[in-house]
Amino acid sequence: MTTNRPNQILNLPNILTMTRIAAIPLLAVLLLSPSRNSGFWAAAVFALASITDWLDGYLARRMGIVTVFGKFLDPIADKMIVMAAMVMILPFGRVPAWMVLVILGREIIITGLRGIASSEGIVIQASDLGKFKTIFQIVAILGLILHYDYNWFFGIVHPLLTVNMHNIGMFYLWIATILTIWSGVDYLARFIKVIVR
Image (cartoon, one colour):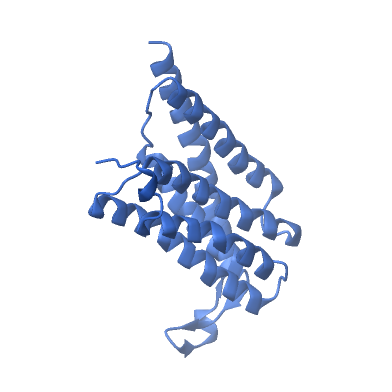
């Protein structure tokens, strides 16, 4: 059920989505500093925002208040916070510029294609590839924001438990980048198939 009445814009799922957008300035301020403490709090903000990404969709479906406004704003909020995080850590050399360009370029192109399809009354559903891409992006960004070595696990501190969060972030970012390209090509192929019908 899709509801698009004006008084339905300010429902709980949409408020969560708008909260995710409102968290972007706080995330950006925290990421102005490359320090461990700033990274920790920035990762906490990003993690909470990412949880709202799942929660707003779940609540919208569960409560039967999926709105046109929410369907429009939710993917934009996702892209905004992901790109804000990646752009802010770029000056610290934590992420290759070309990967940021690939991910940003894909999102701009796919958003444009979705707009064209929507103007023609065509809905091209997001594929599982796109969902997996988002998950890997989130995990990668969390690792890259945390960046430093951490040698504790459930309160246990030991040198053998040392984990370099930057390496973990880059591992998942490579997977996310591959999925970004793959899902972009997949969407483009489905777009062309539908349009030329």
